Amino acid sequence: MAKKQFKAESKRLLEMMINSIYTQKEIFLRELISNASDAIDKIYYKALSDEQMVFNKEDYYIQISVDEASRTLTISDTGIGMTDKELETNLGVIAKSGSLAFKQENEAQEDHHIIGQFGVGFYSAFMVADEVTVTSRALGSEEAYQWFSKGADGYTIKPAEKAEVGTDIVLKIKENTEDEQYDEFLQEYRLKAIIKKYSDFIRYPIKMEVSVQKPKEGSENEFETVREEQTINSMVPIWRRNKNELTKEDYTNFYNEKRYGFDQPLKYTHVRAEGAVVYNAILFIPESTPFDYYTKEYEKGLELYSNGVLIMEKCADLLPDYFSFVKGMVDSEDLSLNISREMLQHDRQLKLIAKNIKSKIKSMLQGMLNNEREDYEKFYKAFGRQLKYGVYSEYGMHKDDLQDLLLFYSSKEKKLVSLSEYVSRMPEEQKYIYYAAGESIERIDKLPQTERVADKGFEILYFTEDIDEFAIKMLQQYKEKEFRSVSSGDLGIEDEAENKASEAEGDNKELLEKMQTLLEGKVKSVKVSKRLKSHPVCLSAEGELSIEMEKVLKAMPDGGNVQADKVLEINVEHEVFQSLKAAYASDEEKFKLYTHLLYNQALLIEGLPIQDPVEFTNDICKVMV
Image 1 (tube, rainbow, N blue to C red):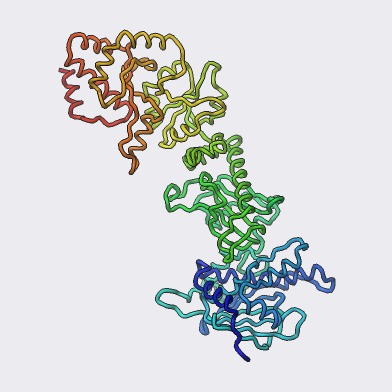
Image 2 (image 1 turned 180 degrees about the horizontal axis):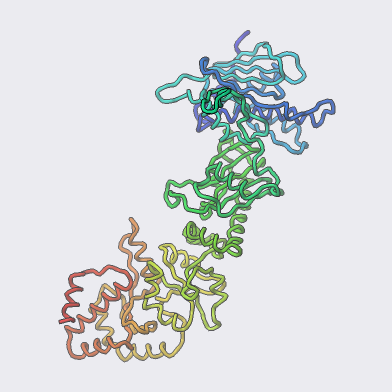
């Protein structure tokens, strides 16, 4: 029996695969179980076209056996088996896939679930094994053959004995090294975990003898360890079961079993799509934020299955960043997998699935907002910031997808409202959607800048998160209504106060210019306020950068010395202005003192730091004396 050599290109491919194609060694078990499942499927498909064959699913299974003493792991199946020629063709030529060839021969057959495509999965066994022995007896044959190899140096094929049709693959597991631990692949709990992780939904039983604790015969309190055969996998995934037979508890249990989170799902949807691309999906909206959600360490993505076999634990390409909080899975037969089946080719099918999932998530959230407001607000408290980041990111290209999902606290309603709800309540004479930015609802409530807008009876949206104003700047408008800050120079309100302020601006031109000179470098200008009613002073900003945006940017590590163009606004109707005016006319030092006090007051109201607190307290003392 002469040893046969792999072809040169096959030998090189085997060396590459053992060392680099698969990122995790545990993948070998997924690949061998998938091949075993394919072998059983081939009998099933033959039975469909052969009236003489009867396929009883109960007769077919995959068996996992461990012998720790001899360091062997055996994967057996009751599938179609291989002849000596098929062993030569399928195992002697790497990347020659018998499953793929079978699939191509039976393209017209419906209900196709053959998993293998590339013919390289079998060789992943050499990542963990020094020797691989394959004993197989083909369907319809009385003869069995054995294929044996120690890796890239070649293989042998010889006649063998095997009582039943099917294939046994025996792996001689490597010894541990300083860098690698191989004993885990001989441990019962580890093998069970790998099967549950990758092959839980293989549609044939995966059987394994395991240790269990049972009461001793005749005793209620004493237990003994016994060995018994168990089916490790679930076989029928929840997404292939009839939706009408599933309950909310079934989906919640699935969420918990898959460890999508330590919370409970707020909402879920079960998708079965047919058409340009066929897939099943179950999507969950979590109840609470993962502890690492707003960190660089957080990994988004859905579990990706191909015919019930886990391909990727987190497929990031299936979710846009702004929906990265969604958990769940997708299973499709139509995906073009790469050679290792661990990654996807970025093809049309994947993009179609991702596009459809994005639409489903948006519909699910919109439905919550419209019909389950309490749950939506709970979700929004946890993940609303992410939606706002989505509006702001990539120059606002996603704003149309997200604007209807945004909520902000309303000055009038005293609760969170949507932009649609705000616009629906706008009086005919109101030109803009007004907003005020600040650290909290309580602080915004006291802002002097809100007085004039509130006095007109117009609703104000409160922006309390650092991302809010940036997102709105990107949004620009909603339903043809522009957003306008209550600190904006032009509030779009034409009334008597506007005319009075314009007159006072001219009457006090020299006084305002003198104040501007005293505050040179601190404010861009000093003006008569058109927005103040009961307060003496406030700050506003000209240009695109608001005072709140300045604070946010300065708080960033690389924020630099960004400055908003600040305007000090004076309320000429306030009694303080009369004191200021009198000081301007008769006491230059007092006028300077009042100017700096008013400026520092305005800083405090805005939550900005006073440049010289000692000078400020001294100025207060001077007034008191």
